[in-house]
Image 1 (cartoon, rainbow, N blue to C red):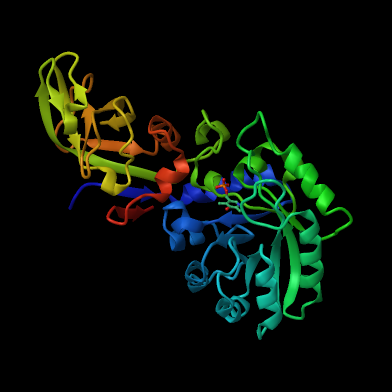
Image 2: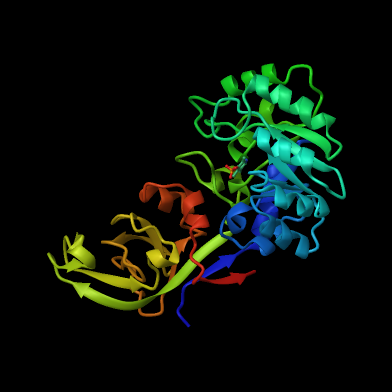
Amino acid sequence: MRPIVARIDSAALAHNLMVARQAAGSTRLVAVVKANGYGHGLARVGQALRAADGYAVLTLDEAATLRAQGLSHPIVLLEGFFHPDELPEIARRRLIPVIHRDDQIDALARARVEHRIDCFLKFDSGMHRLGFAAAPARAALQRLRALPQVGQVTLMSHFAHADEPEVGVATQLADFRAATQGLTHAVSLANSATLLRYPEARGDWARPGIMLYGANPFAGQTGADLGLLPAMHLESRIIATHHLRRGEGVGYGHAFRAERDLKIGVVACGYADGYPRHAPTGTPIMVEGRLTRTLGRVSMDMLYADLTGIPGAHVGSPVVLWGAGVPVETVAAAAGTIAYELLTALAPRVRIEAT
Ligand SMILES: *Cc1c(COP(=O)(O)O)cnc(C)c1O
């Protein structure tokens, strides 16, 4: 068996949910489990987070996977529905679509459904991704409330700068409050960054994602700074070693050349496993429990680790690509991306081992 494995730690997921609970106070938590539970496996994550008050996904298939696990929580569909044909199943499975366009309300008005459908009504408070501007949102709310197909309506918005402390959520929050003045509906505003940093914007239903998987949404920090535990450990082994003489190159393009004589290890992990190809020489990696650096260009199935200072390293030595001791945030930052992308890009060919 090829030695690469992603170990998924269910206890870490449950622990991180508790950290979110502590930040949330009485705010209820919709665990965001889109993108296959941020790469950790939807069914497994759904079970590990069953103490959440609800889940958020994108598709009916994802919602069906959660229901098949026996999970009867509220499930929010973050992009709503894509076609009116989906409405009967949404009603039958008691899913909660996000309503962000007028034609979705037209479709609800025409739908024959066996139960009322609870909805999240999305206000665009400045991100300009999904949702209605202030005045059309009030009109949309009036329409929704008049429909016999519609049950409870929760008012929702999303912040563009919650993870950037210099900007924050104040402007969007003020615009959302102005747009919803006088309304007594429940409100859902907060992703992980908002939940952690802006208690005034917690709302009634928060929507944490990344923090549940143990990663920190703020640049330059790691999950450990928040008491979070990594839920994914991407591990492999050394499958070959070489001695490079000073000046010799390694890998495609000889993107790394030895500054001095050194010993390197070839690791069974490449970009086709989800490791970022843009991770340059110097990206942190752990071999035999010792932090070291990657060398040269990541190839499809392999990459290189500097074994200087790890005299015990040999073929078969354990390697941590990210997880305990190698925060996924630091690997992501080295590659010019964010932990979200690395976790969700874990390739299907990587064996998952659940603990
Ligand atoms: C993905 C998503 C979230 C979760 O965001 P995190 O930064 O992972 O906490 C919350 N709300 C919406 C609308 C999203 O699309």
